[in-house]
Length: 266
Ligand code: PEP
Image (tube, rainbow, N blue to C red; front, side, top):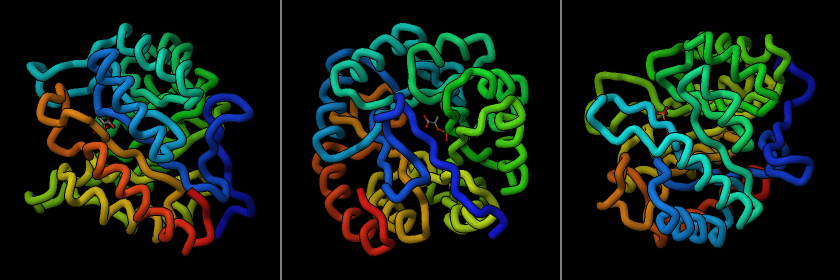
């Protein structure tokens, strides 16, 4: 190992949620912010089950321009409302350099999505924002390219970077992407940064989210980023991969002993 001490990234002020310490952090919420009711229902479920941070996209980087693109600025307000109500910090994606300042004002951590991992103008803005950044691995990026993208953020003076493995493209079609858990252990070996796993966008299927979450905890990940929706069929974005309330609650129960077995706490 090349680094004497692991970096701990805390979102949401000194008493916020930490990634990279002894704790294992589950970040959960809907793929996209849709309505006030949807948000309060989902957030109640994930908070009650023990999630330590909320996710939800206001700006969605969709493959098709005809898909729901997110609520934008009004979605940020709905997220901020949930953060006020629960005290849980929020992470949300930013897709354009011009929006970085606004998203940084209304959230606790900026997410850079897989499609923007090498958007260097966006990385520079995010690096200068003063907020921690969750950097997803590009779906066709090597580990080295991923770590160099993190260097763009850190070069701007921002050391609060969290890496997120979210699956890469392979020949396999029965999963949405191929979750590369070896990249988690390897990134942990090569860097001092926290590394988390997104079992939702990688597999694309709710029945694989549980097994991959347990495996992620077992192989040394510092946390998870999970899609949860209480009305997956009606979801405006990626409903097919979201866990419903009972599935998420059950997963948290199954996760606890695995997290404890690797000497951490949930
Ligand atoms: C997301 O987490 O909302 C998302 C769009 O993920 P990815 O960038 O990994 O596709």
